[in-house]
Image (cartoon, rainbow, N blue to C red):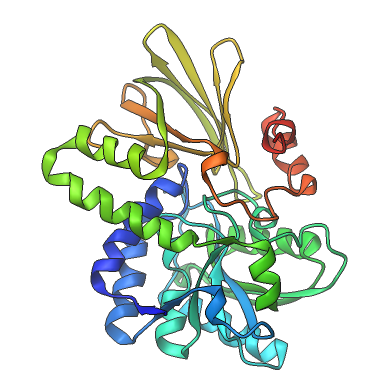
Length: 363
């Protein structure tokens, strides 16, 4: 049966979601604000897809952009709610529940506030267990579909007259870049509700149980915290079947914000006798050693931790910081049909100048 989400779940979602954020995935404080508002203003309910009628409409609640602290962004909880209301109006039918495109520092809770205010269920399914740079990577196999869909976006920096509302119809591959441009115009971050599909499609194509995994990881982290940083890191590894690829100091950070609302570049960590080069497109997409040998590639989870076991996002990394590189191999993750779709990779490969698909799609 479904369970009503509580204040304790908010902190677990932030902690666990921050690991799956893979260096991106929003802001922890934004997540706490969203989650706390949701569980105090209403009763958001987390349900398994098996509890949902197969013909019910499920949409994806998402946040779009790359607010790495370099832009004047503003996103309010009401923006998430308004985006759902606009999608229901465009669809001409009620949305039964909301899944999320990805876990993250705040995105694990993207569906909670609409759930509290509108009564939509929080579906325990994600477009991708980890955070990713493009909407297509969380679109549960719709990236190459010629079928028109509906996407809405709401939000923006009010003081600079950057607040926007959009309803866009068309194939998701054509519509997603429009919403990303809107995020940039709004100040770098915008709320979205998109791609309504039947629950039967979600069951076949999403990464099921993705929110439960983030909550369980967060609970394990909280339980380990009194014992110190190494205990937290051990708990993260044990709970996820993850490993530490290396630990060392940041010797180079070359990451640039683009007008497509992406942070793109590399971060290099000197870990003992070798370098670890992390390739960034909002999130960590790959890790190579100093000779270019690939150690990890999306959809693997790749996260930087400080020695206390706290995730450190790309936007806050500075030279000389000591970081650990954490890795979960994709074999240990539920994978959606988005991340096994070859058409989602060319954009990232072109932006980063490295091969991704051949690693991501290898069995």
